[in-house]
Length: 324
Image (tube, rainbow, N blue to C red):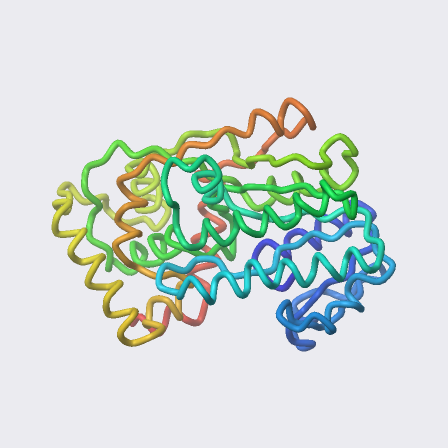
């Protein structure tokens, strides 16, 4: 609950009149949340099954956000241990404590694994395996389950490749991207947590899987241009040749594996690798029509309007001084 999405979700749940209990790995993370009479905290680790009991006692709905994300070079065994075994542990604790519903925050990357069109990423495979666990529990009648598959999430405090892109453009350290027509889907963090709140009370959502987007198709070129403008920087008139950017991304990925956490990964919360390049040149358009039609989901955010707050947050972070 102490992560980017978790903090936003807690605030929105409290504002909507819910009582909230968080699961934190470190008790000191409670300082991230303002004191609220309807908010309590528990501590535990997804890989320590016994530590999860207190978090699941006397609750109606479990929103499972825990896991590993924004990784390109983490071993698949490690991903499965945290994202799959961790899900199994918290799910079993919820079932033992008669929790009515679990909402699993998965990823749009799980869909490619489900369709079998491609092998997907190690992260996508781990999230798909976690989905199968909660769906099987629903089929056995042990607990209601709902799976959410958000695309990349934006907002102040965001992580990942787009956050890295924003930060590096701000410092003038990212070469202009190649000319591309790549289109992607995104979702604002406030819209995502509103989707969660809708599902908490939607009995008809049980057993279903929903994609979550803001309904807009973004071009990588337009995103890049908007970031330059948000920083007040001049938009370059030249583009980096694709082959040069690809080689640079592959080398960065190799150095990351060689040296462990690179400076960029520590600072911006993301890896740079050959997959980063693939994300720049491969369309990733997802529809959330099912969520809109069945549950009345109405996204209110868009990336361009959110960008000033994102830039302000990044600019305020002490880590930017490390790039000086």
